[in-house]
Length: 325
Image (cartoon, rainbow, N blue to C red):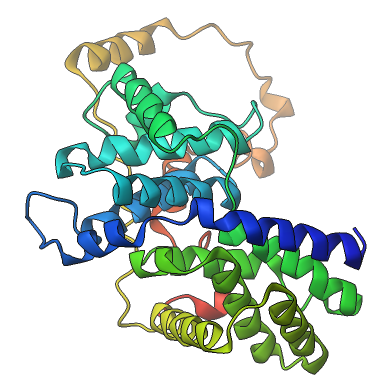
């Protein structure tokens, strides 16, 4: 896409972003709600976003799915009064809606699977009803303008100015930084265009690229973003990413998955071990000791990889910003 079309698309999304920003009055009400109260507090919301982050990573969902799910969640919480006991159902319905719009059919998981892996205490029919409520209240049909929308467009504009910087200005890293910011509800108050530009400028300053920095100034003037607004969110972004890289930071608690097996299932598993199919005899002369490790599967390795997708930090943030152990 050439520069003219990029700028035109940027302008079009800028004019539409207001429809997809959560109501500030609703967000302020959430921030003023005390923990363990009758309503949803900011801490409850942030914990729910961390759960969605872990589930989206486990199922291999894209950053677009996660960002859209957070946008739907914040808009719904800012619009409706939700009881804490219903928050997990609302959050999972937002993730499922986002996945249905963003993921290919081959990657899409069923609502029952999301409930089972997420260890939620409601049914698939409950999830389906909540999805209809969320979609109806938010008039959600296809997608939304989010900070990721602008981040992708800004990245294309930046590479158009300096194609040789593609490896230095990593889109994957920018997406990971956006995820870190969305953990905090306060960033939901930022305009998507401003938050994305603040993230981009923060990274460009880190790689010390004067030409790209000048490009961001041109984009700022094109979208008529105020200097004070950009500076305010730029400082918030820098503080958030600095805190996230600090050992003092409380990271998302991506706990290991606990598989609960019923007594009947356990009995079936035990009895099935007696029904193993007959295998052909392996000739003694043809056995190679060096192949012994490859000939057997380590079932524990599967469990380790399953839990590490939720527990480890590798899938969520670049190496240089991970917590030092």
